[in-house]
Length: 580
Image (tube, rainbow, N blue to C red; front, side, top):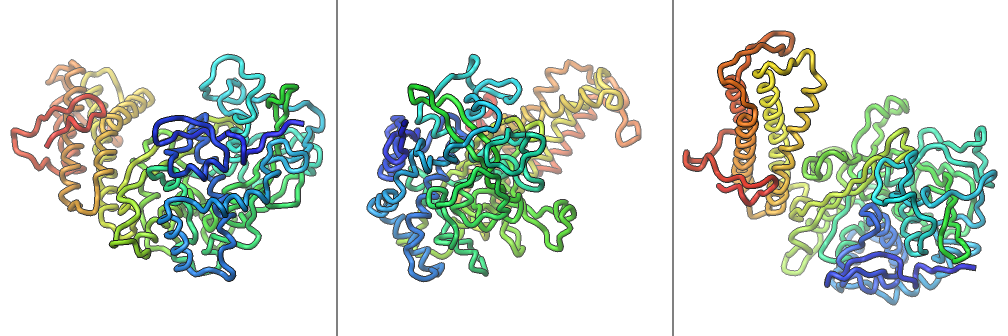
């Protein structure tokens, strides 16, 4: 019988601070946490599920530290004590893991890790590895691939373990084949329960977490011990009754279970969304799998357990459910936009009954406001905000796109009362208006040439404007990343915003000049086009006047002398070439 114990065998891919990439066991991960820079999975989207697994262990280890329900002050003190130590209590971790050692074995006969023992399909052989591995080419299931060839026949136990954790987090929806023990078979097919999350849980949210300079800091920054401002018992996340990890539970079933709500943060971190089993070949390598629906939860009102996503009030769902209260659902990432263009839901604090920012951001806000740091210092001057996720196509039955972006921000950006947040978001909003002005300018140049009609060729014009917008955002990407990283509490928000908007203004003016130069349109040719059901004359002169006017409206007039109006903007994305 094969055996591969995740506590002792190296299987988690990590990059150490010295740059060396190594496989480590779960025990070694905690032992070397301060020496490891980050987890680095086979694909970036493995990182977050593996990080969440380690966090679940932390919640389990420290969950019984208090005889009675802890106060918020006690929980902050616990967090600060661990942070100050600079390492985890390995004795506590080892003692805890020893209790469940056999349940971390991939092939344990009774309790295989993250699997259902003896699981079998009712009328077919196990699936190939294409059902387990996200980037194995499968034309009917995959819309992207990072592998070549027809796929793989077998993989190592270490790689299989990584993909198993990924599968529970991100698996696709769609029709599943029935397994022995499932009581929800409909015409020899298994469907996700209506109204429940059909993909893996992380596929339903906009995964967001904070990273520090090493894995120890990253784990600590995302170890949220209570929900700030919570008025009920559910606000305490550590040591919740009935909140158990899969390896702690004795009951097992091959059946689908509609549990609707998470039992707590550990349940959210380790949800067994699939009943699955890895299949080995004669060489004890994983060659296939069995996958069916498992524990199913609702897509709304999970913000008391899930801490790694922004949220929104969903009025449409309220109407569909016929509820008196507005349900709260996770905000998903947009695969077509950079993280800095979607910061509002993550950083913006609305004075409503519910804070809709990710729990990890709220926790950083709380630590800065209430913890007594030595010399009144915060734990970090800056952190990296990382977003990860998957998007799906065709009724969520196939992967469509993978999301992975990161952004360095001052820790002050997590403070709900920091004026700089609104300044940052205001610049992003103004930039969006200015980029639209550039896209309309290029449209107007086409109208001036007589080659396009906004009435008869809406699709080509729309695609052209989209291309202009994406080119503009790509040109400004590095500028925004640097500006956001350097927006610290010592900066004057008004002055910083003015300088920032000037830089954006210059880039877009230069881009407008480039498009005009490339167009080769006679300056005085006039054509008419329809704008809001009325005809307007258009030539290059009118187009330029409209463009510059709209830039001034969106960004304000350039606050520079005449000699500084045409700086060197450098290559695309080179923010350092933009000079004041």
